Amino acid sequence: MAKTFDVGIESLGSNGASQAAAHQAVGRQAAPGGLLPLPLRGVRDGQSAVTPAAPAGKSFFLETFGCQMNDHDSEKVAGVLQGRGYHSAESPAQADLVLYNTCSIREKAAQKVFARLGDWKTLADGKIIGVLGCLAQQEGEEIFERAPWVSLVCGSASYRKLPELIAQLESGGRRVTGLDLDTDETFETEITRRDNLLRAYITIIEGCDYACSYCVVPHTRGPERSRSSEAVLAEARRLADAGYSEIQLLGQTVNSYRDPSPRGWKFVELLRAVAAVAGIRRVRFTTSHPNDFHREIVEAIDEVPELCDHVHLPVQSGSTRVLREMLRTYTREEYLQKIEWIRAARRPISITSDIIVGFPGETEADFAETLSLLDTAKYDAIFSFKYSPRPNTSAMHLPDAIPEEEKSRRLAILNERQRAIQLAANEKLVGQSYEVLVDGCHPARTQWGGRTSCNRLINFTSPHVNLLGEYVQVKVTRAGPNSFAGEHVT
Ligand code: SAM
Ligand code: SF4
Image 1 (spheres, rainbow, N blue to C red):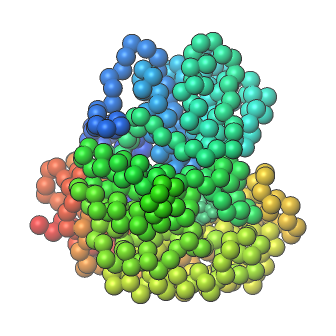
Image 2: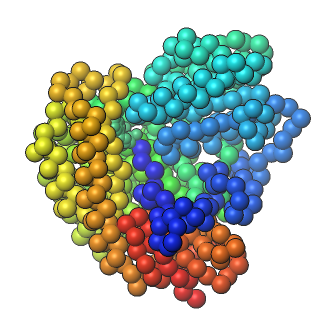
């Protein structure tokens, strides 16, 4: 699943790198220096609570790779550990338990994790090293062969078992695994550590029942299972009580949600109900599968101000022939029909997408169709990927692999075309004012940063000294392809 659509602060002024440093996001990802120190929050079932103070006990370090679902799974794993008395260590070297929550969506992501594990070859003595998430599920016990110093391997479909697995290690167990995919359970935790003070994630559906031919997710995250609407709403209310005003609903195919309780709500009904929770000002959702994207979602966004005006709707390819090979279950025309619904909404809704280039057998003509789809859809941003063959996927066995250099060439052309589209569209927004939730700052420069409802990133100046967490009006003064500069309108 894709991250939010901006790729970072670009150079709007003299020096892109220093501008990037200037915008320090609130939360764990932020680099030291410049960030106002803010405590992490834990939200406990039934009450809000500050993360428990570190006991004299053991410590953990958890590094996350991959998508927002992984980020949020890590928040829950951290909550489980803190509930067992572990406290969070500053660095892996200081921790008793070192966990990697991994991604295996592309080969590079998997290689990165093995490189990290390699670092412990001679240093792991006395520590518990664990691999969680997609790579754990994909490689299973093979991980013990490749890195014998690892003692915990647990896929995301088995996270319910984590406390039990950790208990086995604490009582002297040497190697433990949680690798079952055969589950109808979701990962509910008593405490979830919240690493972002402003935006809180809620997983509403786990796993995936689609079978896209290039994708490991059905294999690594198991079958689709939705949480009950009551559990989701209770979490949203707790978050609102804890001071959150922005919620992001998560799922690999978030809009395939089906309430398993007798209410039987569809996704759009849950969406409207979450938006109605007192105190919630912004609701986002990702990732939507085009097949389950119905007009009623656009109608809801039009009618409910709390629903953010942004839809992430991955197309993957502009060629119906390639889409069929990818087993995406829609044609180019059916997809573009949905884009038309969104573009016809009363309020402007930004649209972002994921695109894969170099799928086996993708011809020049197929690729040209992807480029022409960019011109038609006029996305506000895209996440673009070179096709990466993955184990346990049906595309692994397709003939006519595209050479790496050709994939790179197509990727560069695609990104250049999209950059021009974004720049032209963004320049038209100069002079407009937007409500921005301020999530970053550089106090020395009185420069602030934040997101609009449509998820555009705006850096702006303001004479005010404390705007973090505030909703403010910002007028756009300059536009780049990926972000904007503006000034606080008082
Ligand atoms: N569930 C979402 C959907 O259906 O669009 C996508 C989730 S996937 C984790 C995020 C993105 O990674 C996909 O949209 C796709 O563009 C990309 N991706 C997945 N498998 C890939 C592969 N084997 N090679 C390259 N990109 C891949
Ligand atoms: Fe992967 Fe397709 Fe499921 Fe998305 S819908 S997670 S791309 S299998």
